[in-house]
Length: 339
Image (spheres, rainbow, N blue to C red):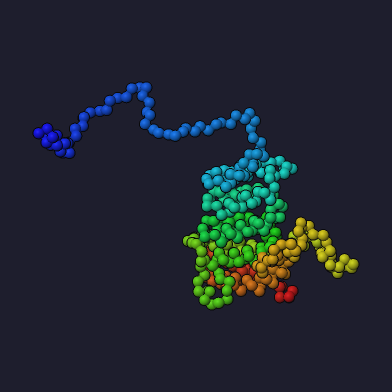
């Protein structure tokens, strides 16, 4: 009997409803400490105990290393500090770091996803000495070409602003560096959606094949204005040639320009004596006549056909296209007689 009663009692436990006490929980004392959390260790950052502040040079180097930070605000603030340090230095004082060290660090931010970082980068470039930037025009132009053909419309717009500034300050160096003439023209043509082929099927559409050009067309207008400025600089004689004004027919000073010492650090760069082999687009075109010849043979036809299709849109875009046509007409004037 005892075992059967125990079994009945165990079966009843499955059907019994638990009863809960109704009311507030018991108040905890004032000195209660919650020990319910679990932690393996508690880490406390040790404060710096140095009695001397870091030097401006070490702070400059530290902010230069923070340009690769994953935080957008940190990259922007570091660029702002570097810009302020360069702008407020004494006039006769050298840069905290040479331009050859600064440019590889800051030019990566041309393609940065943050608009604030790109705006601050342009302010930093404006603070650098223009004479030092001319020696690194090829390196600057490499990132500019990557930026103006980027898929994101905002990055293309910011890079075009940077390119326009560079044309105003070191335009001669940009058109005379390796690949500066043909490759840059190809990039400026590509953002307009103008095909470089002569096939009729290539002109069935005149819209950019990458990204959204923008409903307002501001990026397209910037690209056309940059193309016009680039062509005007390319179709002009360099400032070094204009400085030598000697009558070539005054004997015995014949061919004086050919015997003058060049002011460039690498005046034989166009020969590419020690560099890797270059393709046709990477050649250096230092002379105005050389740039005119290459432009007429390879780019003038596609650009003029693209301008005809763009002028039909009218408005601000049509006026910008007319400016490009005017730059071509004035720059190529008299080229046939030279040939």
